[in-house]
Length: 292
Ligand code: CDV
Image (cartoon, rainbow, N blue to C red; front, side):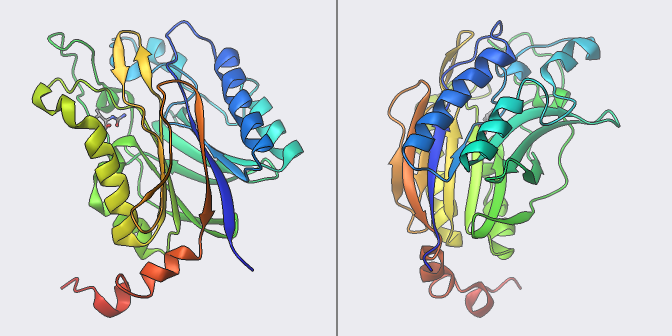
């Protein structure tokens, strides 16, 4: 039987600082409904989908930082997404800020099956930016202040295949895809908040779009897997975030692409069996890799 998953890459437009969780979840639900009417099996949301990209704000007081974090998932604000998934047999993946009972802070993404149950959790490994307040920047990128690093890339059985997750900066690192690929991953889901302006070296700004697709496409091709990259895009609190969310095939080709900087769904039929065309030929790891 063919293993085809119809996927909606559910790009978010900007979320301003004052927008509350209920309003954001309402927007995500609209995208889920659209995906359902398009016949999707799964919707992929972005990194830190429930709030503005808060690592741009410095707060000395840890309590002021914790307002951005979820202490449970699901919780009353996000329960409607889980209910919709269960009632309509549509899965989803969601990025959010997680505060654990033990007091750890993670940049987290969950995978939710068609019954509305969490079947996979991933915590961001590569935390970019800086730890200290740097007032010279137009906006901060304090992921190293807000978050603890996750402990690795795992894979999860679901939707008839082997799935993995990665978050934003992870997608730029070859080892992300390689570690997932070596575990048999056929579909990697990643959300991102990528400011177009890169303060440490603004000469790189014009290359943001090119590099986003470069890493998604090369990661997919070199590891024989599908990759879904989903942005939070547009003008968020004076910061321009890259869009160009894409679903990339194991051939390295873009199968679906968002063309706006707002809430938008890009849909593709993801044939997991296509991975074998690459994993069993040119990228037969057991046969051809030379790790030594
Ligand atoms: N959210 C991110 O991880 N953003 C980084 C930026 C800071 C470079 C990214 O790799 O897109």
